[in-house]
Amino acid sequence: MTTATFSHAPDHGRVRSAFRAVLDVFASLREGLAAAHEYERLSRLSDTALEARGLSRETLSQDVFREFLAR
Image (cartoon, rainbow, N blue to C red):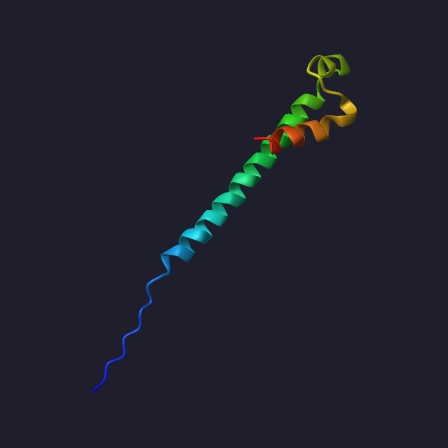
């Protein structure tokens, strides 16, 4: 009589890669939310306060985005 055995062990490399991809998605979401909160905080400042920080209301979204991309 012949016995067939099947290995159902997960491929740890694939599992690890999938887990890493999910963590990367959550890290990106966290960074995006942080950028949005920073934009909201800065957008409440007066034009004078923004200028004191080297920012302008016209380019605020680009400035915040660029800051978070540089991290």
